[in-house]
Image (tube, rainbow, N blue to C red):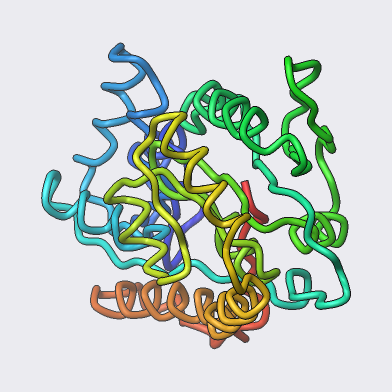
Length: 284
């Protein structure tokens, strides 16, 4: 790699390339999740964890990771708050709500089996309520679902606006999905965990202990809410100020401050960048 102001590792395998490169440039680590948790205890989990000892300046998705890396590994870390694309996800008052929705992913950290068990209990209690599933295709189950698979943001917003509540499980860093649900007035039900509460920090998110019974109970309580439309409007309003432009500006500032704090070669100059050019990943 050529000399640069900064070199950014993303997932843990790339950290080794950044660490071993001889090019000039401040070393950064864009940490989106605690990746040792992606593997059973093994060489892979140790190799992932070892990257936190490389002395990079971390920029993390949410405060939980920044605090964890700082306390446990002594890593200097900045973080950005999650945004929400309000041009895609918004309240559609004309839509009638008749279901719940589940964001299904087969990665172990998304707790698919737990989610399916919760939905099965919910279906037995409320057979009158539609169950929408999107993300990875699930296939036949012993209860009725509408299995959407992967959909466009516009289609997804339509699904959210047809649902009272959405189940979003994450056993490591939280998903981007709860903010998108909130923007559409669909109340997210999330497994209760420090990493979820710390990063979401929203009074309209509902938390439940990660058992099928308690997740199903929380979904059912939202379907029976006495004034759901008022709740939906307040939930949508709660995330209007959470923008990806704001998140991008915070990342931009963190990069510049860290680079400017060290001595730079004479032939390199920091060039201003428009915040609007900063693009972050879609939900996943």
